[in-house]
Amino acid sequence: MATTIESGNAGAANKKKHLGIPEAIFVEDVDAFMKQPGNDTADAVLRKLDEQYQKYKYMELNLGQKKLRLKSQIPQIKQTLEILRHMQKKKDTTDPMETHFLLADNVYCKASVPPTDKVCLWLGANVMLEYDIDEAQALLEKNLATASRNLDSLEEDLDFLRDQFTTTEVNMARVYNWDVKRRSKDNLLKSAERS
Image 1 (spheres, helix red, strand yellow):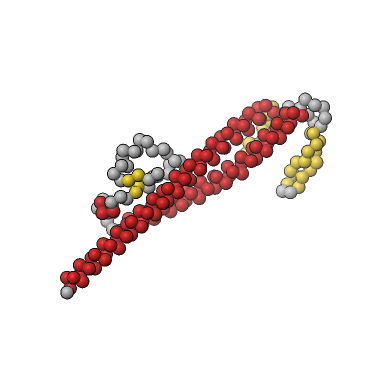
Image 2: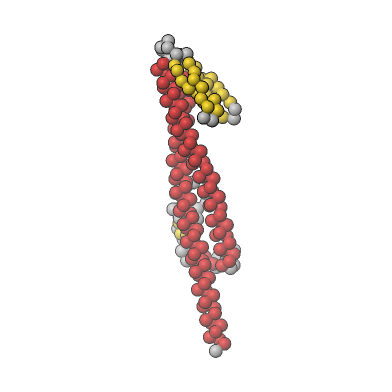
């Protein structure tokens, strides 16, 4: 959640870090905010806020890609675990297991797999390792737990990021409206001086 400028220092110790996403500060008093050093003109402040907004958009894009990757990875891990559990049941029998395996996209081949207590897992980066079924199952369960935890954390970070979008958009609107009021007041004063 966004904090106000006045309460920003008090809650600094309690803030949860969200993957290094900077927290947008809600501008409670626009007049006081515009008098701070570095806030010379409304256009300069709006440029800074827009830059911050664009950074949040970029972060959202990256987090969205991570979320999609995790959402596709979790079902694959679950499917592999199911296969391992099936192989675990079949390893004590003498009957070979009939299956189909993927050769290429949409191309499968029929295979007869003899009972075994070893499996090979792709670890990524063109690396495959042989494991005992129990070790492979433990590894995949750990990977599934980690991926699920990461997905939950990612959801929280995306929610936090949406809050930062809203705060930044509101700040931009408040500064813009402040500038419009200031300009109309200046125009009224100039027209009153002329008459």
